Amino acid sequence: MFSLEPIHPNLCHQEVEHLFKETLIDSTESRSHPNRHTGKAPFCFDRNDPAVPARLCSHSRPRLGGCGRLGRASRRTLSRCHSGGGGHSQLILEAAPDVQITAIDQDAQAIQAAQAKLKEFGDRVQFHRANFAEFQPDQLFDGIIADLGVSSAQFDTGDRGFSFRLEAPLDMRMDQRQKLTAAEIINAWDEAKLANIFFHYGEERLSRRIARRIVERRPFQTTIELAEAIAYSVPRSYRYGRIHPATRVFQALRIAVNQELTVLETFLQKAPTWLKLDAHLGMISFHSLEDRLVKHAFKDSPLLEVQTKKPIVPQETELEVNSRARSAKLRFARRVEKPNG
Image 1 (cartoon, one colour):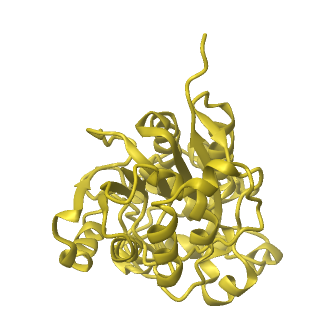
Image 2 (cartoon, one colour):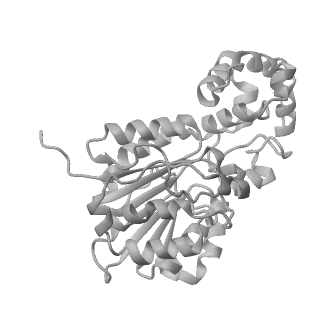
């Protein structure tokens, strides 16, 4: 079985075909050189843009190949948490006829999009609407790739409230069944609590100043209203800096609404136990809070052996096509025997 997180159409078809036809089946290279990869390996990230070069596949080729040790006739199942639009899974399914995918996502819209895209593959794809940390597999995986955070589709869908550039209600829920929204946090939480999440989840150094302005100006109904209040609560030099002054606050709100770091910590504890021996766990993160958790979980787990001493990052050619990849980092670890004692 192979667990993958968001199903984004991010992989170059030729690289996916090379990965899954050649090395998912033949894992000799992975077993011979388990620690051969560095932070300069090809990456292949994109959130919903299929034109980006496939560096992830190039890097992943040997270690994902380790999941295919059962031989050419074996059926491998890939479980894709946070299924996104189904692009990655489509390329994988086309490249490897013996692979099955379990797609996991708490976002109903993402599942619907993936179901439509992957309809032709029939029962080779099984969908589960769930938070990936709450998912309970009924068998072990041949590998896991988790693509964390919010997808381009979620950012670009105006009514979801993830983007401060689009007019929308302050929602930010990945799972629309839950009650807590960004509006409730912004309009009901006290100033100290707001400053705390802005600082810890957004790494916003002006967290207290922004929280004070928000409390003075609330209630807020839309993303644009909130973004403008944030922008005018900071110094002019900060307002017109490299990133929009609302960027970190919106990240913090999204993390708080969806309990993203708590979910990630739970997933990092569970995921190694979902893997077969020698299977690989790959994690793509998009900010330092996620990457720090992944790095230390890989290092501290007695069930994992770190495969990437440094994270894999996008190359300049990729960023020219997809600027949203700029903060992406990929790390891999291998499932090992639990030490005695």
